[in-house]
Image 1 (cartoon, helix red, strand yellow):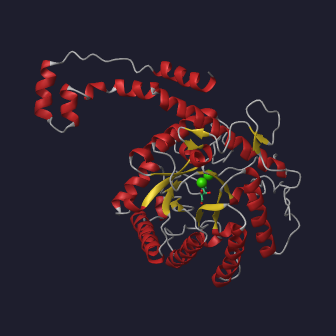
Image 2 (tube, helix red, strand yellow):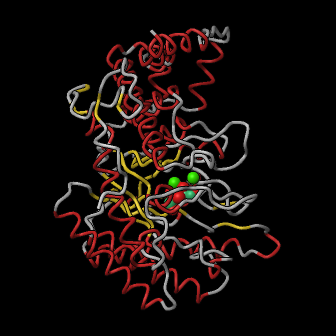
Image 3 (cartoon, protein in one colour):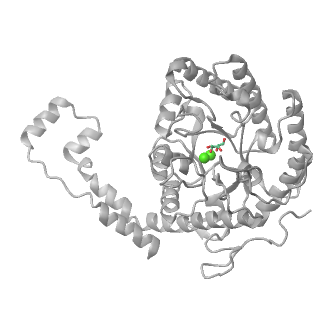
Length: 437
Ligand code: XLS
Ligand code: CA
Ligand code: CA
């Protein structure tokens, strides 16, 4: 059955088109820097926002109109949404989707029954995959929604909850493997705290690491070769989330000997909640060899929470693709639209229009970023700024040949310091030139 009636395959028509159901920049087979756009961008649809979200907010219930409305039996509904997902991805030319275990199968009364239902849906997905090229970019477990996770999952004060979460993640990893998922994501849902007055910080962090070690061991045991990703977020739902930002996560992973097993899944809106730019988080992952995947969205600078809006800011997508290209591009990762249509954009068409906007803005950003790197103007400016480390005392410092005593000797003889301008405004103007011509 067709769910999104009246909408055909979305095609590239070029920047001049007036057709809102066409791409203006995303041209999947167009080659940019020796690689097809589709292979650069590796788009994915986020199951939770696209098929689960209804547009509810704290002041009102959902507004969404969806083609599967009216189906009440939970398993029939789960299957209808999955069929709709394949149709949606195919029409949009999106090759991947990402899911939480509980997005694709609702929770039943017992864990055993939930797992059985999940198996039924997994078989259903495998059937759909036989006639479709749509695949799984990553899977994950929703260990934050159910009230049992009120105090967290792996960092809960209640050991029974730790055990339940372990069982849930075990199954979610098995399912991700079964479906050929290329990555498995850990986003620390409620792994954090509200107040240190009731929190054993050391035990919670140790337990979190124990949990991740168990996941690493189990992946080995079942032969899951996908990439493990951690998704930093500084706050929401808890006041302080342990996976605060990339730098914090890297420190945590290194402390507990986990760093070889994980890369980052960087979400734009989480970066801004941590008071960083999207580019900062990507660059931090890149320079540490932990660039993995991206949750593509954007926040609102006037709001202090995770608004998960579709990415339409060309500056952000340009600089994100600039970092992505500098990281050597995606391998197992991709651009997952962890984005939701606004409550007032409640029609099924809005799901298409929003993804088209996000895909076009990233495709446009990719083309600009590629031009920026081929010209090398910005990279040259950075290299020039640090040229004092290429020779003389700077080269000695970098080579580890200097110490405090030799540097003091040098400074005593060279104490008339000459600095140069950082030229920020010039560089911003150059960036504008790349974007707007
Ligand atoms: C929530 C997160 C979440 C993860 C997957 O803020 O973005 O959706 O991406 O659990
Ligand atoms: Ca996310
Ligand atoms: Ca988010």
